[in-house]
Amino acid sequence: MGPLTTLHATQPLEEATVHVSGPLPLTGPAAGHLRALGATMKQGEAQAGRAHISLTVPGLGTVNAETAWADVLPDADDADDEATVQAATGVMAVHGRRDGAPRGLAVDYAATCASVLTVQGILAALVGQARGGGTERVATGADRAALLTVSQYLAAACAPEAEAVPMAAGGPPFTASDGTRFELEALEPGTWAGFWRELGAPPEAIRSGWRPFQFRYATACAPLPEALHATTRGVPWERIRQAAAVAGAAVCPLHPMTATPGSAAPWTMETGKPWTTRPPVPPAPEDPARPLAGLTVLEAGRRIQAPLAAHLLGLLGADVVRIEPPGGDPLRGMPPCCSDISARWLALNRHKRAVDIDIKSAAGQAELRELASGADVFLHNWAPGKAEQLGLDAAAFQAANPGLVHAYTSGWAGRLPDAPIGTDFMVQARTGIGEAVRPLDESPAPSLMTLIDVLGGLLGAEAILAGLLQRERSGHGVRVESSLLGAAETLIAAAGHRRRPAGFRRPLPTADGWIATTDDSAAAARNQRTALAKLTNQQALAALRKQGLAATPVTTDLASLLTDPRLDGALGRDSHGCVTVPSPWRFS
Image (cartoon, rainbow, N blue to C red; front, side):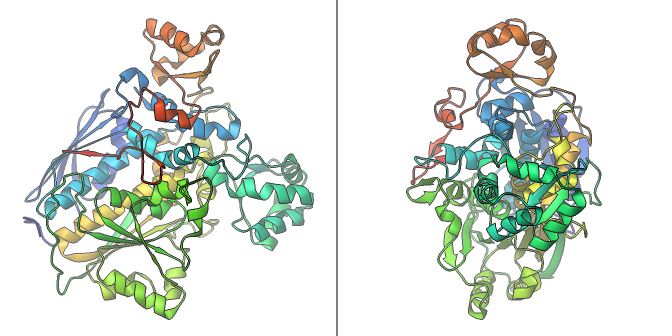
């Protein structure tokens, strides 16, 4: 154990002091999360440029963190605020797929993700210090965060194979005859077909609509047959609810941005029993970029939320062991593939070790508990009640290993009893994200980019790192739970619970592409929209910059990022030939 003087701490950052300064979009979430972890805040004045956070824990050490709009992109003109970061990194391209043209997210998504990554970097550095090593400096950027959020889409776009479904504009939400706009969730083809048959949809439309709907998580678009939209427009909302109940599907009307019963933090933490016999402490990490080296993480996750959280811990040096069903994760074969492995799967799971375990069998449950007895973290995102049903809940694991950090990344954290199934788009619908991400002249609609799954994964990693630090400071095991609801609340807080004005962050077309201005330059540039449309991208940029207006080209083809001079070779390829994005952090 490192040179700690504060033992039995009740919070990970008990007695810590934090000084914060810089742009509010980059510092706001971080300041709130550090405060919720027990730190005493000393807020500086909001200012343009980089954000600075200095955190000191008595008896442990100091970490200085810096967060910039552009940390990979070398030219400030290419990423000077949220809008230009979204444009340059492909976020506008992915979010705009449903509409058939690039669109900016009206909420500060890249900045929010960067702020959470900043907290992760600080906590990881402190865990390293607690183990007798670590570092005092960490840096990240909104551009690094944005590239991480599109990494699955980027990996697929650069794979040698084509997508399994057509890529075209379209998708939910649907509209009932009384005007109710709603999201639908059906995880199985039988459920999908049963719902539409109840409403009398044409059989061919039902059949052809399933795969685009099923793959919308992966493609960020869903070109559904018009007959399906016409079907819902012909029946009232109550009939749609009845059809969903009969078929076992989930439907949720789009809610406005309203506060949900929450807490000060997007996760909860509970200190468990102390270690009776503490295992030998692994050697202090030598590489400052790998403060979790020597620690073991067991991950039993699916889709995005838990796998991404574990991926981030792996980037920080942890040995991640992925628990998969007998025969392996079926998503390994999801097209497009690189060297016969799904590019999207690799984006979240490369470098993890895999163990096949049948958790439904008594032998498999015993094997998993045995693995957990020698691990530092167990992470899962199983459906509510599944862990208890299988005898694999937190109590069972911590009985085998009192020093374990047990982490659950859930959908609703048990806080909304009337909530629908806890998947990304349903959480967006229920919490009003459809309003937050679109300006006033666009109808509210959840983004088909998996915003909440990704931010939920970031918050899951943040909670686990806080748990590891709490374990080091207290000598007790820890239980943490993060949720998609917490991710949505974090994003709505970043939006200020208000919708942006018409045309906000909407790129401007040119003769050969699109350009996006900074938020400060947008009004002046829109007044020249007609003239700019006759110019090439480069001519339009030159004309705007001559007037002192900041703008950048909008990436519309994700594969072009590989050779984009703005990224200066920052992207790479793994051993399978799959594209990789830069690490979210720089430690020194």
